[in-house]
Image (cartoon, rainbow, N blue to C red):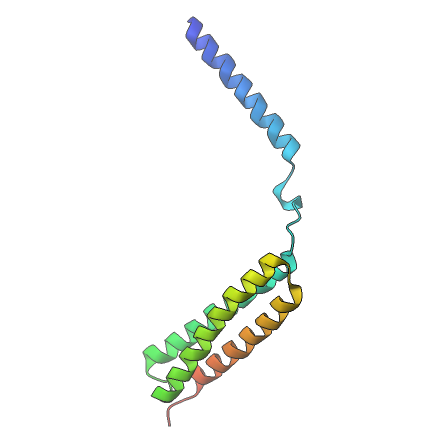
Length: 124
């Protein structure tokens, strides 16, 4: 075996050993306790709720079933407000303000409920 090939093989073994040792010391990622995890999950769930409300609205708008242009503007306002509240809730979660997160998520729910109900309202 050539000298540089042997050196590369030994270097590779050494690096592998170091990486393995570092991995063993780090432990599983799942065990890492992230601060404010409950608040972050609440915000994440609220984001999904807003996405769902947008989908319901888009189906109604594309299908031409939104009851009126006035209602369409109201629905869009609710959806935009919900998005703004999500941003505020994320900031509150990052700061560990659980009460603020809960209040903002509750407001998001109100806006998405109005948007979905409005999207389902039929033309007369």
